[in-house]
Length: 320
View 1: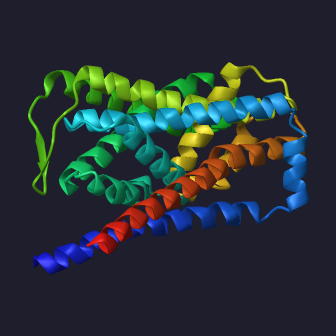
View 2 (view 1 turned 30 degrees about the vertical axis):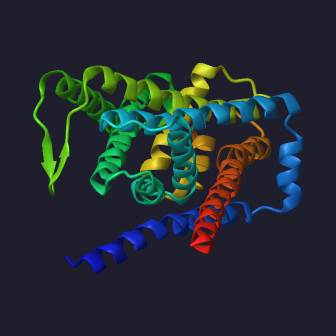
């Protein structure tokens, strides 16, 4: 491939990061535009301020865990990077992919734009994004198993087919987790795909992937839990099972942010008879705190960063 063509392709991939940011902003706007501003305000105002505070703290903790995906990925490829850079890339990347969906593409485009500026090779970024994808996958395996034992029985349906499907998915998750851990212990040869070499992570790193991925989803669940408990009395062990099932299925539906899928499943699975309007208000608060606010903050940070780079570049050109 000609050098000029490669350069054009790199620019397209780099600029696509900003495109996916715009897609993420549109998706969250599209979801919230279904409700009147007064309804959204009422939903937020009905939640006690201290609950909103703890929900925001849980959201912050969730994005710290998400940024740690990048930290693990950098260790995986054997590189070093200033902490603010991987925190910055992780926060921006996940705030976009959480809303735009297709995390490998949308989050990967953001990371390509940032990491290439920090002198990372394209193949290294591919390895990092793939590794982060497996971090989420193995965490999902673990959480599906956990969710199976914690979720109310009626959530899986009463028919034998529904029960068989649920048991099958849980068994597949257990097998997937065992294979991943087994490979980390006993398989030491690299896997080469289109000239990109992927090493099997060590057992210690595989365990760290499950812990960090689990912490990410745990913190996300707390955002909704703190928003929900003013309206219903539900033990956390029951709630987390419901959340895990709805969250994992929402992600694998490939609908950006699990919009609609997560809410529908959560309302169906949650045990007991409750005021659906109040629960839906808590779900709106969850969307705003865990999805909208991080996207707004990351937008301000990202465009300030881009402006700063262009400003410095312009000054350098003027000095010549």
